[in-house]
Image (cartoon, rainbow, N blue to C red):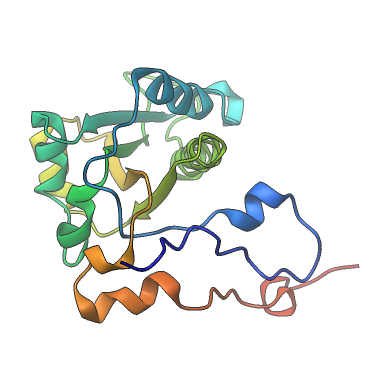
Length: 198
């Protein structure tokens, strides 16, 4: 069996922190690896302390461990190829943006809720990397079905599911998807991302 592709450091245009350059999103996870209670607590604590506009903390999470009912309930509403590889992850985390406050509120809608939810998952992903774990975020989810599955109110909007676990050999994936695990990583150049800079 080939070595597991754990070292896929980004080739950056400028120096960045090593843990950021090393972070990547595998699809091949070890189906026997376990995320401990302490690791789960650490991941959620990192998400809890992410930046929050006006400290509203307009994000919620559903956490399921592999081989539990909660995991299965999240998994059944993944879309496409995600349903093939994600079941091997140790943990699935559904991230939910709270887009409206409960009851009357002078500020009205939380228009930044999805942004804040993304920040929380970024914190969680960085903490996972620090713990020697890997994450893969999925936008391919059945939003309405996920809301119904967990009896969420309309103001709670499912945004992503993050698979968390220990990276494994690409051989665990169907052949046509294995190259994605080892292909060269790429991003748009800074010159295309920045529209104006002085």
